[in-house]
Figure 1 (spheres, rainbow, N blue to C red):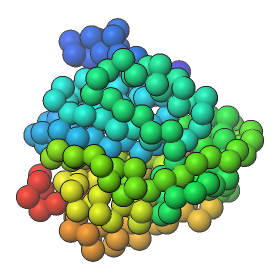
Figure 2: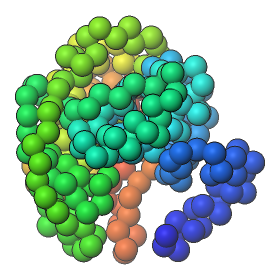
Figure 3: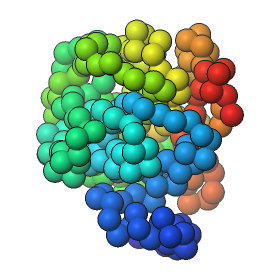
Length: 247
């Protein structure tokens, strides 16, 4: 844990709910704790949360705890990571895991497994990523199954309000393009987007914004960001909402 993370954790532990979450949530993530609390403060009463790029369940855990009336559907393609995700949250009746990547069309794809599992992606690392985080590296490539939001969720009721969260390391637009029907039922989209490419072939924020504008969403705010060692913002977790939920 670096100095910045120590300061962030101290801020969480100053709050009674933060101390409780740190003790009881499995897994616990400072970023997810803060992000979900910021969403809760916006008074968006989500009943369904779609969690694309779940990793070991950091966001999913924060979601089921912060929104006790919500059902969480998580997607994770890497078998070993998905197994841990299932172990962490499988006992919760409001949680479901889909062992697949998300994309524009169903099939298989080559997945770049990173030494940091949360940085694994369908796209190779960009030089910008390696410059900002020299310790990051691809350790292997594996073939994984890929589905679309529309195919995977076609039989889901998706009780609203619905949040779609995507943290796909540069593959967010591909997933959105495979979820045209799903997006009609979604009230808010929270996704990671880069201000300069961190993965080869990654779309810009403007490209994602233009796509979502065409589907009835507008950029609301940034809920979190990632900076390099010089303090430059590299990525942000951008919240898009429909007009009726604009805060």
